[in-house]
Length: 637
Image (cartoon, rainbow, N blue to C red):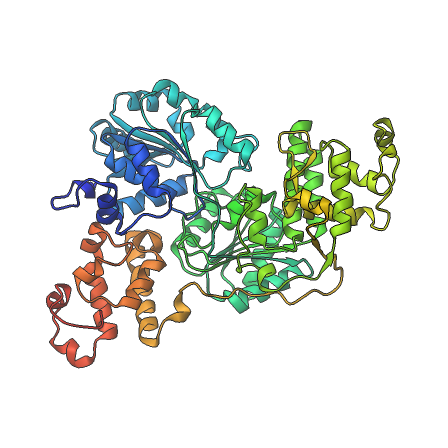
C-alpha cells in the first residue's frame, strides 16, 4: 500500500493548507472547509450541510490526515467507497475499505492494516460497522474520527431512508471521545433534527454551507412528447456527453434506453429489477467510459462520484424537491457547466399522489409527503427564478435571481395575481393558519363541505369570494404562493399552511404578485443556458488539440489500471493543463488537482504530451524529455 503523502520527507508541515497542497494539489480551501477542518481537528463534533460537489469529502479526509489515529468513514454504497479509496491511493494516502465485495483474504489484509495502524482512512458500510467483529476491531485501534456520509439516510422523513443508519447512535455510546462528523447535501428541517438527535450530536457545531450549485442550469419544460423532447435536448446540447436520464418506472427505463440506442446513442438501463451482474456492469461502463448515458430509476445515483456528468434529465417528475436536488446534484461535480432538465406534466403528480395514498405510511407521514409533493409542483409551476424557489425550500430565502435558469433567461407568460393572492392569504389567516390547500379552496369557491360547515368556516368573509377561479386554478395559486415564499408549508405533520412574514406586504397592498399562466397549448421556446463558465468551447485550436490528447492519454492510463478516468484526473485539471500548457514539473505542480503523488506518477507523461502538441518542430528536436521535465526548455507556460 502507498505510504501517506503527509508523512513523506520534504512534505509541507502538517497544517490544513499544507495537507491540501501536498496531497490533493489545491492551493486554497472553499467556503467553510477550513473552519470545519480546524474544528474537527481540535476534537469537535460537526454537522456539515454542503452542496453536492462542494467538497464535503475533503473536510473529513484532511481532518483524518491531521489527527492521530484512524479515520473511519461510514458510506452507504460500495461503488462510492471504491471510487474514494482509489482516488485517495492515487493521491498517495493509505486508504482501504471493508465491504461485502472483498474476498476473505482481502478482508483479512484490510483488518490487519487497521490493527497495525497502516491506514489513514477506512471506509465501511453501516451494516459492516455494526457487526461485533468490526466494533471489536475498532475498539483496539487509536481512532482519529468518525464521518457519517450521506447522513440524511438516518431520517425516516428524508428522501432516502435506510433503517440501518438509525443504529449508528452506537458510535457516541461506544466511542464518546472520538470526533463525529455527519455530512449531507440534502436535509430539510425535520431531517436535520433527526440527524442531530439520532447521532447524539446535540453539542455539535452545525456548518451550513448553502445549497446553491451555480454551475447548474435549471430548466423545466411542459411534457408534450417527452422522448422527442429528450432527443432534441441531447443532440443540440450534449451530443457526446455522459449523463443520467431518470424515469419513474422500470418499464420506462427499458423503453427509453432501447429508444436511445436505436437512434445511435450509447444508453444503458439501470433499475432494481435487473440482474445484479448487469447493473454492476452497466454502472462500471458509465464510470469508466466517456459519453455513456444511463437511463435509470432512483435506484441509480447515490454515491456516483463521476465529476464530468454534464446533464441530469428527468423524463418524469422526481419524488420531491429533496430527491430532485440530490439527483440533479450528480451533474457538474467538477464545477463546469451542466444541465438539470425536466419534463413536467400533471399526470406525474397524479402518479406520485396515487403511490402515496397506496403506501403503508402513517397519516402523519402522508401529510408530510403530500406537502413535499406540493412544494415540487410549486417549483415546476414557478414564474420566478427557479433557483430562488429551490433554495428557499431549504431555508435560503434571500438568494437573488440567478440568471442561470429558464425563468431568468426567458420570462414566462404570467398574470397579475395580487387580488387572488390577497384572497388566498386572507383564507389562510382567517382559518387560523392550520389548514391545508384543499380545505382553503373549498372555502374560497364556496363549497359547503361537511368539514367546512362543522368548523363554521362557511360563515367567514372569505367563503365564496373566489368563484372567478376554478378549483384547479386556486390550487395552482396556493402552490405558487408556497413556491414564492409567501406561504409556509407545515412539515411537522399537520399539513397546514401558514403566512410567511412577506405575506403582510401583499395583504396591505404594498406588494404585487404574478403567477405563471396555465397554458395547455404550445409553449415558449425552451431557453438554453448561457455558457459563461469556462469549458472546452473557449479553448483555442492548439489548446483543444492538447485537451483531446490529454483525455486520450487519461483513458488509456485508466484502462491500464482498471480505474475510472476521473480517478486519474478530473476534466477541470486537464482543462487547466490545456490552457496553461506547462512544460516543466515545477509549473505543472501549480495546476489545481495535481498533488505530490500524482506529479511523481504522471508528471513526465503530461509535460511530454504538452511539449508534443505545443512546441514547434525545431524546439522538439532539441528538447530531451529530461530537460523538459526540469524546466530547461522554454515553452508557452
